[in-house]
Length: 292
Ligand code: GUN
Image (cartoon, rainbow, N blue to C red; front, top):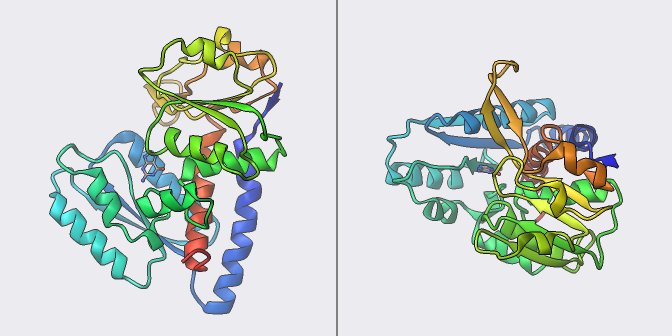
C-alpha cells in the first residue's frame, strides 16, 4: 500500500506556482489577486477560507476576504458579485459554500463572471470541461487529477466508481475521469443515494472516489484487493485532543481499507490540501489569462 501524500504533492506544486507568481510580479508589477466571499460563520467554511487565504500569501498572491453576516440578502450578495466581476484589480473570486437557505446557490454561481470563476462551478466552465476545452476545473476534482498525475497512476481503461453526485465533487469528477485525457479514459460509474447494490459495484472498482460526506461509509468489504481509493470526506467532529477543537474524518474506514489498497489518500493530509492548490493554480491561470 502506498500513501498518496497530499502534503508532499501540494508543497511541490505550490513551489512551481510561487515561481510563476514571482515571474508575473517581475514582468507586470502585480500579484495574482484572489477574493473570497464568506457568508455567515459556519465553522468548516471559516477554516477552509482561512486556509485558502493563508496559502495565497505563501505563494506570493494577494488575497482579500469579504465577510457578510448570514442575514445578508440575496440581492445584496448578487450586487457584490457584479461589482467583483467589474473590478479589474481582481483576477478571480469564490463564494464559499454552503450559503444560508434564503440564498439560491445557482443564482450566485451563474452571476459570477465565468472568466473569474476560479472555483470552476459556472455552467460555462462545466460545459467546457465536458468538451475537454481549456477552462477552470472545479478545485477538488482538479486536485485529484493533479494527484493522480503526480504519482503517474495509469487510469486508462480502469473501472472508476465515484460515490456521491454533488455539483462540487462527484458529478464533475465523473466527467473528468471519463474524458479522453490523461488522467482519464476510465469506465465511470457515478453512484448516489438511490443506487442499489452499491457494494457489488464498488467491488468491481479499480479506482474508488468517495465523496459522500459520511464517516466510515466505505468499508473493507466494499473494496477489492489492489484498488486505488481516493477519500474526499471532510467530516468534522468535536474533539478535545486537537488544537482546533475538531478532528477530521474521511468517508473511508482507513484503518481497515488501507491494507487492501495499492494506493490510498489519508484524511487529513490528502485531497483537502490538493483542493487548495487547484484554487491557486486556477487563480494564476486567471491572472495570466490562460483560458479567456
Ligand atoms: N465548499 C466546499 N468546497 C468548496 C469549494 O471548493 N468552493 C467553494 N466555493 N465552496 C466550497
